[in-house]
Image (cartoon, rainbow, N blue to C red; front, side, top):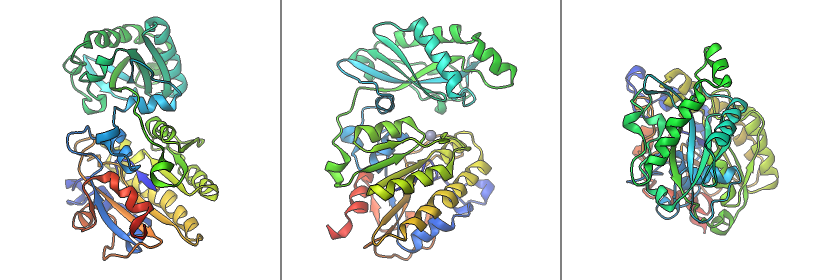
Length: 394
Ligand SMILES: [Zn+2]
């Protein structure tokens, strides 16, 4: 199962009304379609926040309506944090604040080592029995607090409000004052930290504030093997995907050079996926780069990321699978990230499925427009996994 995060889009004026997926050269994904089926699936149920957390639950075959508790608990699982009792995990972004606005949701994609220094400093200054900070990857960290009511707060994802006022987007609801206090204090503590002075000196965005969002308590998930009868591994640079893998009993495989950004090591991900298939039945490869390009509004980079995914991941893995007596392959985005919006949407996504026992349909290429006309449609996207793994034969 190969996932190009945020790959799906809407027609773009600059591309003459084509989508990035239509404009990109994707011979391998088109080949999957031509040798199998093109379908469409809604991975974000109506009323849910259109994020990778909800969408990745769906693509792995778990009904978000039943199992979703928030993004942060999945990322906390990756970091080995146990959320017992009244503990609530928050995603804690290192952001760049400036002129009362959210200038950058990622603090210039700050390095994990610089971020770890800032987060451990914050934990020393602001941490206590009921508040703890844990460093993750790049700008993505976790803050754990005690209090069931905090799970119900209204928190805004910072990548949705880049360029907007800080004040207008602070958390709201019962108990929000505590969070707001932490976020304001973090700015006072971080803005003149030596790590940030050095970043500004190099012309990089500083991680001068933390932004708390995506909170929830631990979800209760049955294992993937119990649900679908196979085990395997998950390859991703993104903690929420690795955390979810851990929670459902799949192996979160560490890959050197997997950054979750444009420069991610596609070849290494492919190598590790192939090695995983030598010993396991199932592997999911998740590539974040098209999503990041969309958040940055960078059309050229999005097309390049889709082409890299096609050439360096889909192509070689399909070639490897072709040697198997029986295999199935599913290629899809988790959710669209329309470049015009610069954030996720809950629109249905196209998927391409080929392999053993999969009947061929008429479709010729992998894109949103063709998929939207397909009769192979999953309004409950989580049901696609059953179709993928078991299909008609079961
Ligand atoms: Zn995204």
